[in-house]
Structures are given as C-alpha cells and as structure tokens.
Amino acid sequence: MPQMTAALLAQAIATAFAAGTCLLLLLTLIPASRSVARHLWPILASEAAILAAGVLPWMLPPLALLAILLVAAGRVGFESGTVHGLTAGRPFSVSHAIALVAVSALAWFSGTGAFLWTAGVLLAAALATTSLRPDTSLAGSLARFALFPLLPLAAFSHAASEQHLAPVLVLAFFLVEVFDSFSLLGGKLYGRTPLVPRLSPRKTWEGLATGGGALAIALLSLVAWLGLPLLPMLLAGLVVVAAAIAGDLLGSLAKRRAGVKDYPAVMAVQGGLLDIIDSWLVAGPCLAGLAALLGWL
Image 1 (cartoon, rainbow, N blue to C red):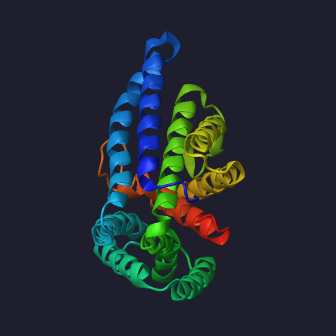
Image 2: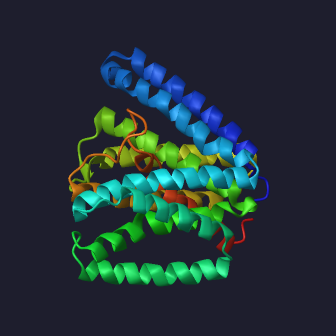
C-alpha cells in the first residue's frame, strides 16, 4: 500500500476521533441514551491518551521507538506475570517482565528467517505443553505465558523493527480501536446476547455487529480518502476482526483462570496496559504478515 503513511493515518485517526466525539455528544443529548452516554465520556477521554500513545511513537526514530516498546514490554510482563502467578501460586511479575523485555529486544534485532523458525518451535512446544500440563504447574503456566503475551509481543516487536511496516501497524491499531470502541458502545446501548460468556461476559453479539459495522465504515472512508485498494482493505478488516477477538479472548483467558477481572491497572477507566493492547498485539503482526505475504508494501 504505497500511498499509506503513518502521518496520513494519524490524520485519519484524529478525524475519526472527532467524529466519535460528535456521535457521543449526540447520544448524550438524546434522552433514551443519555444515561449510557454519560458513563462513556471518561472512557472517551482515556481513549484520547491511548490514541496518542499508539500513534505518536511511530513518528520517532527507530531507537526511540524501540525504547518505548521495551518499556511497554516490561509493563506487560509485570501485569501478565502477576496474573499467571496467581494461578500457579508463584511470584512471576518480575521474572516475566525481564523475560518480555529480553525477548522483545531479541525479536527486534533478529533476522526474519531466524525469528520465524524460533517462534515456530516455541509455539509448537508451548501448545504441546499446555495440553499435557495443568495451569497450576510451572511448565503449564510458562507455556500459557509463551502463547500469550510472549509470542504475540515478540512478533509485534519484530514487525515494528521494519520501518516500512509502521503504517500497517498503525492501521491495525486504528482498526482495532474502532472495532473495540464501537463494540463497547453497541454492547452498552443494546447488548443482550453474550458472545463468549465464560471468558468475556461483557462482550455481546450486538456489540460485535456494531463494531463490525463501524469498522466497515472506517475502511470505506480510508479507501475514499487515501485512495487505498478496496479488496485488500476489506480483507485487512476481516483479519483485524478475527485477530482482535482472538487477542481479547487470550487476554481474558488468563484472567478468568486467575479469578480476576483486569490486569493491574495503569488507567482507572481502562485497566492494565495488556487490557488495552491485547487485541493489537495479535492484530498488528497478523496484518503485517498478510501485507508482506500479498506484496502490499
């Protein structure tokens, strides 16, 4: 997608945020939706900070981006280690934070061939271990940590090291945020039917439909505004929806096993950093891999 740049996508994201603000203002003025809309204003304010944090680092030099990524990896490792430690009955917060920082740095500097082989072997080993070992065992807990968030974060870090993939990762971030935000809005307004009640009871089919519809509008707007090809963008949307749901459910799975609602919070409204970026961690590498495979770049 040669026409797409991180700067152009940043403009699109700012425009979409302004449109979302106007929509929430309209819902606040309508009596039937006023009570729900009022509770969404704090989320919208925190969403502004998330959008800035998700877009601005891609405008920085590579080493500055790496530094930010490693800080985020340490925080994600701390949060994930805390939750996995509750299940296994062991203190994992510090060790998992160190592990994610180290793995993210190695993934950033590794060649693509070496990374894919290593990740494939680790994925196979983790899947085999999770089927044989219980959650409370050391091996089982480490294998589940490897499946999420270690491997997705390693893939994300490796993709982020390639400067030409920056627009794709920003695009994935934008599409995930649109899908998640409008899924939340639809679920709050008229959500009735749980999507996966055991893992994520707040997610509903009605919210999923609302998020999917908003994502389609966002994709068509990008096609018209930036002159992007229609079919690849629609395919990108399908990939992002599937990957975003997978990332959210993988993040929820560890919390449900530990019996907690959220990862240790960084933002009162949003919860932990992993609660915020779990979908992006999966959707970003998936979309980057698809773009590279189909020669969009």
